[in-house]
Image (tube, rainbow, N blue to C red; front, side):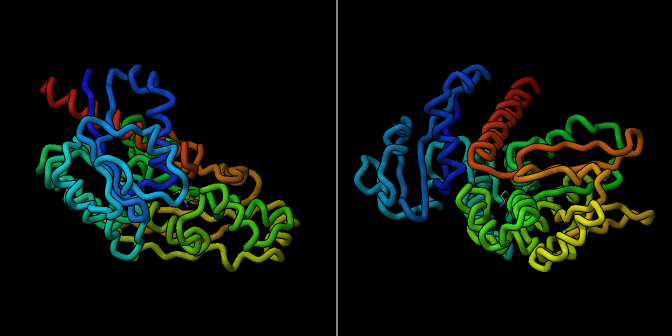
Length: 348
Ligand code: HSE
C-alpha cells in the first residue's frame, strides 16, 4: 500500500473536514489502496505543527476554539508556510488558504514552492488556477508532479474530471452554469421574501460564503471559476479580467417578483462560448430564466454546468457547489488522482 504524507496549508472548515474524514472514516481511504498521514499543518491563526511520523489529528480536532499549536509537541504559534512546504517530509501539499482574486497570493507562492520542491499539490483555491493555471501546470510537469484542483469549481462535484475524462472525443463548444452556491441560495431565499443581507448572513453561517461574501454576490467568485472552466475545457487563455462580470447586487425583490409573474427565475449565470473565429467570449451576469431552461430549477447551494457539445448536444451535471465536507471530498478525489499519477509513472 502506498502511504502518502500530507501537509495542510490553511486549517479552515474544508481541511478540518478532510482531517475528520481521515480520523472518522479510515476505511474509505484504505479501500482505495492508500494510506494517508498528515505530517504538518500550518495556519495563519493557529501557527505550525510538524510531526514527521504523523500528527494525532483527533487531538488537533479536539483543541478548543481560538487555540494555537504552541502547546503541542512540534507546535509553534507562528505559521511558517514556506519552511513546511519546502522542507517537511510531505509528498502532497493541500493548499487551502483564502482565495485572493487580485494576485492569488499567498496561495500562488505556496503552490509554486511546493511544485518546485517536487511535491504534488492539491487545492481548492481558485485564485492561483484562474490567474496562473497554465504556468503552474507547466511547473508541475517540469518537476514530475501532479497539480490537482477539482474542488476549485463546484466543490466535490466532479465537473473538471467529468469533462476531461468522460467527454473525451466530443468537442465542447461552450459551457453555461450556476457556479456559486451562495448567490444561488440567496436568490432562492429572496424569492421567499428574505432580504439579501439576511440570506447572505445565513449562507455565511452554513459555511458556503467566501471569507468576503462580496465575492459571492458581486460575481467575482464565478468570474474565477468560469475562467478556470473556459481555460480547462475550451482551451481558452482567459484571465479573470477578460470575463465581463455583473453580480446579483442589482437583483432587487421587485425584479424577482416581476420575473416570477412571467414564470421566470433569476440565476447568476456564467457562460463561455467559442466564436467561429476560435476566440472565446465569457460573461457572468444575472439572467431571468424561463421555467423550461435546464438551469432554472437548480436551487439552493446546488450548482450545475451545461456543456454544449457537438455530438451529444447539451450535457448537464448538477451537484453541491460549496460546503465543508463536499469540498473536503474534492481534496480526497485529488489525492486519489495523485495516486493514479504515481501509478502511471510506475507502469510507464
Ligand atoms: N463561496 C463559494 C460558493 C464557495 O458559494 O459557491 C465554493 O467555491
